[in-house]
Length: 159
Image (cartoon, rainbow, N blue to C red):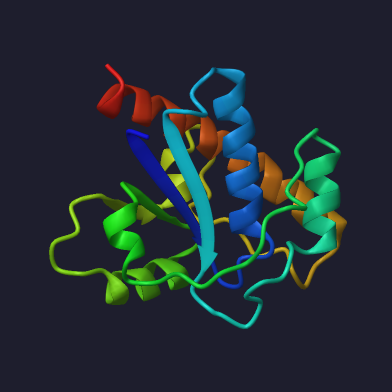
C-alpha cells in the first residue's frame, strides 16, 4: 500500500465505519483498493469488538455497501505511525486526536469534511441518538467528503 487512511469518530460504530466502508467501495470502483489502505477507530473504547450500529449497517446496505464485518476498536498513538491520513468526524474527536498525536507525525490530521466540496457543514453529526434519517444524512456527507479525499490522494500521492 502506498497510502493509508484512518477514519475516526467517538465509538467507531456509526460514522467512522460508514466512512471506511463507503470509501473502500469508492476505491474498488476506481481500481485503487490495492493502493489505498483504510481502517476506522473511535476515540472511546467502550464498543471495542462490536459491529457497527444496525442502523448504520442498514443505511449502508441500502447503498450497496456492506459494513457488517467491521469491528470497533479504539484509536492508539501507534496509528499515527501507520496512517498518512487521520480524519476526524467532528471537532471534539479532532481535539482528542491532536492530544494523542506524537511529535513526529507528518501525515494529515484534519476533519473529514474538510475534503467535501459541496457542503457548508464542517462536522459529520453523530446519528446515534436520532432516527434513521440521520444515518442517511451522514452517508450523504461522507459520500461528498470521500470524493474530495480521493481527489486529494490522487493529486498528492498517485501522480
